[in-house]
Image 1 (cartoon, rainbow, N blue to C red):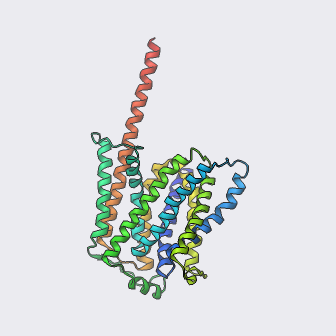
Image 2: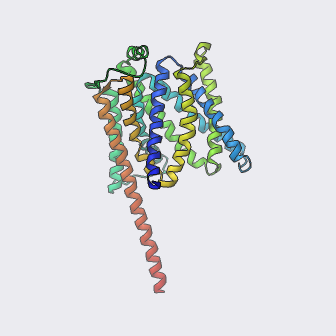
Image 3: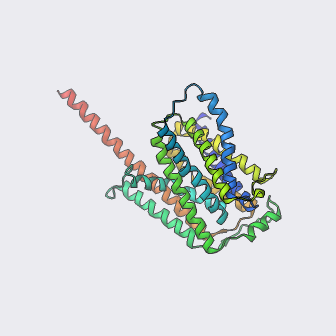
Length: 349
């Protein structure tokens, strides 16, 4: 049973992320302002993380310099505030299924940015390099397919859904036009670019701030302030700030406490047990869970173009991961060969 725990954990993680896309999209469909939602979500996450950080980091937290504080502020602005606000608008323009499908591009975009920043390289004369390049090409083809090709609609024969008919009518009445859908797709990709940049820069920042929990909490607090200022600009009607005991409040609590809190711990635990590649390879589960629940619970109609594009995205993801693992294995082999040669040289002398 002990060996199965990481597999159960990654399934739970991806189910939580599927719930995030579904509940967030539903909150926007019933009229919640995207900027206000991001502020409330970050405020909920801060309220969840601050007491935990005080308890565990009160004595061991390292001092923060002014320059490090500025870096954390800019990092939270780019990777959290901008990313969440952009993806909110993108979800409003498109669907939860698209949001889940686009999550497969995050590892590929992260790798592409790492190449641009010279943190990674592509050797096109090796099998690993060819697979990486092919994976990037498949992802670009997948995004283009989702954006510009719809094809026939795939509606499952399910007539009873768990949301009210009024909400379903609102969703159908807001079916995005072609130009709106295309904008939503590219906004989703832009959000993934900012998120990928956040992942890369955060790795460097952790060298100056080794406490992951403290860094996460500070970013949530700063993002809450930033999101509040953004919401003040784009949501001046006080009625847009009101909350009731409905799906909007449920979405805020879920995103703030469950997505930020529970998955933070579970992802760290899985990476410790199985490594980051194992976690990334389970990303397509988000899409599978989201599409299934959307179709059966919300009655969402899925186009053939979205399915085809999602398949291309998943194929691109696995090609890049396979190429990366291939190059890592070769590098380890070369390293071991050098060590063996040095040992043999020492024995001979």
